[in-house]
Image (cartoon, rainbow, N blue to C red; front, side):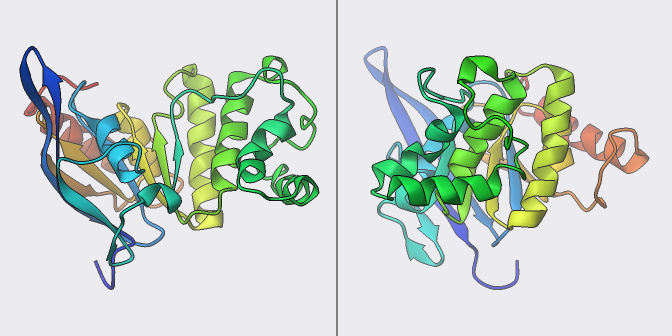
Amino acid sequence: MIGLPRLRVHGVSKAFPYDGGSLLTLDGVSFDVAPEEFVAIIGPSGCGKSTLLEIICGLQSADAGWIEIDGRRAESPGKQVAYMPQADLLFPWRRTLDNIILPQIVQGVPKKEAEAKARKWLPLFGLEDFERAYPGQLSGGMRQRAALLRTFLTERDIVALDEPFGALDSQTRRRLQEWLAGLHGELGRTILLVTHDVEEAILLADRVIVLSSRPARVVEEIEVALPRPRSPLASAFVELKGRILGSLDRTGTMG
């Protein structure tokens, strides 16, 4: 990596109380993420991927280790990292635009200013004709795009996504993967993606970080040096998928 990393995860460990003792979930996890890099984190089910992402976002504290952003130790990383969980968390009684601008309103941005800002982005997210629709009137893919726009409008340079397409059908998921790949190129944010889908990781990421089974450690960091757009049928794609699956097989059951 040339220059200062945008994000540095340094020796992060985390344990939870369990059966009168403690259960170590993360064990000295360390890696760097460059500015505007797209990094996917993948590992066995229950290894602590989501816990790691929540620590990076400031939603949980680490027992050991720390997070650095732009070379400085981040005491409140949530102020610098935008977070989107798997569930879209749209309020059913609020229209699409009102859901999208809610975080800005909470931060004190005047409503008209927040609406004008959001409307500029609606076409890029395919929502320009649905700003007055309620969540129940949107497809699953449209709901996720609305949630993503809400996340990106926080204007934080680092975006953390926790399996954002995991609950969608395969066709919708693939369309949104292709859409997000193009969106990243256009917006230039630094993105961290937790996923259980190896193909999704290869389609989207510049680099894939493979975690071990619990307690999670970094097993391998794999560069995805494939031209875009990427096809799962390409021989180089298939070869890379096999390498990642092999790494996962050596750590435990994927999930």
